[in-house]
Image 1: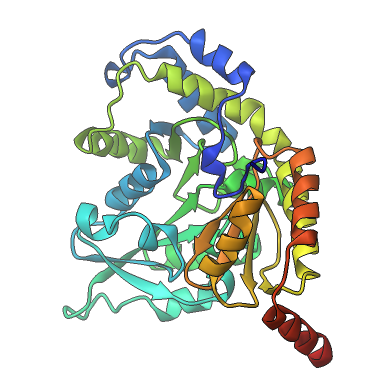
Image 2: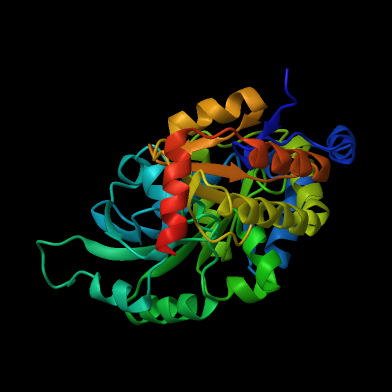
Length: 357
């Protein structure tokens, strides 16, 4: 059987020996009483790193996002986000379920929109027929945009629109450290644009569980109450927080390796006759479309080769690179992709693409 190269998601990572040691040796207490020293250390470190007043350790990115949305809105409000946003597509209808808010979707290239689009989609507060627009959410990097990185100058313009209209600005930063690795911007500098940011520890940072939310002391106090009502009080959570601390202090400094691997594979795929289109590769995600226009059909070809990947709908495929995909595996992946057998239809489409170019 072929060696398995698992590219389905960076959530499939397992803790390193060093991370396991940190977890095993963690000092713990009851976090619901505020007495878990390792959770407290993680929250203090995250707040300081992002230049925010406070932080909250949560079970997942979905929980931290949904808590933030709930604190920033009231039932009947409206949230502006991208039509590709994780908070809209992949969080179980949580905006409606948890906060009773409606959603105004904005379309833009690879899940990113402009300040002018935000301004054009703010409801008139004097019109009682319309929900109150109270929150704008961005996602950085954009998962369904192929790990796309936002232009920070545009974020600053959106911040100005939000301030001028009494709205909050939240960032779903599930893979924010991937963006910061590429832009070389400090977390604290980036955070100045936002009222709140959630960051996942269990994706590119390779921790087994967890996310954190940063914001003002007042915001985090409300968020802590909301976390409790959502069943997020984890008691001796320091064993998990220890992994998160290790992730922030160690794992985030190796993300460039994942990006290099993704870019190498993106370059190989773009030259393959069975690849019809590929999104720009900026971080650790590669999203591409096979010439067959069928993600299921391509997965059938890749599976016997030991390549696991994720169908991004009926047409697109996603590869995600992470700490458990080694350089040797990337080289093996390159060889397998270059040797992949093609049918006659693939060749015809390849030559058609060549002639069109």
